[in-house]
Length: 369
Image 1 (cartoon, one colour):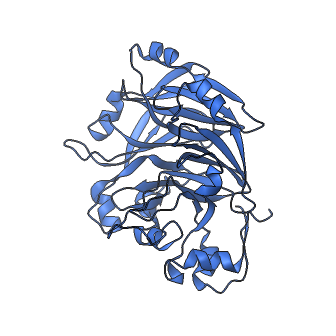
Image 2: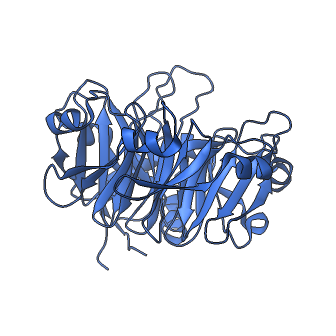
Image 3: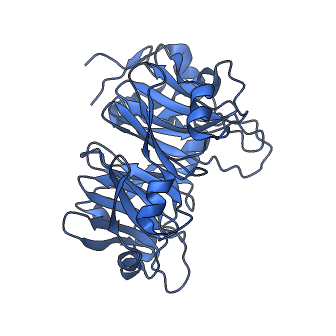
């Protein structure tokens, strides 16, 4: 395919200026200021890639909106596809807080924490919105009075929506409009880890991947898989195994929104203990678990202004996605304390990363996988 973006020498030098050339392991696709445009917003609450484009939900100033970034990393043409009037009218919430924000075909599916509903946003045209799972319907399904859509994921293969529901502590599928199915009960979750609380959720071809970072007895902290096709679950990586493989004492600490199943089958997650992005191949989790981007590499790259006031800054990654065949991640807001720079960033394929490290490339053309 044609290149996703063309980085000039000046762009490359800017991306390397905050650390040594060999440390620049990722690049900025889109700056937060570009995404915010003139909206007055200050926070990017979530993003999803759609080919070479990206969609982001912005909030922070009572005017939430969904922005389309065409040719992310290239032209970066930003248009508003769902404006604040439409979004507030649909949700009744001027501080839209997505529990997840993911793509299924031509529709972005998003759970919302405050309204406990699942919404659909068309990627084609302007202001194409729908309610895929209403709070009353979910309430009737669980037989309660306070459903909680906490976090979730759209299956990378089937397009089905799954979410963790906090009233029943179970994983539920939104199979069609206002139709639900419990796919993993609280009892089944507890049988896996000793507790029914999970951290993060990803889905691929009917198999759910999630972590448990609580660490409280008798909890087995680790990474798990549950096959909804067969109704069976398994422990993929325990905390002790992770420490032995990664050379740390942090165990496994995946964040709720930083768990992602890539189209190539790999599972990626942001770990708050290591402050790093990790990945594994589900077919061999113990043999493939490793760092994709370490804390030091994050700090040495363009997401860090180098102007933060903290002596030990941690730049938290709030979402992971896939843009034009490569892993991308989100920094939700600027921070004068950590030096974080809001924006969407991508991790080049190994060959391109090596060229970035050399610092002698006049022009880098990226190809989609």
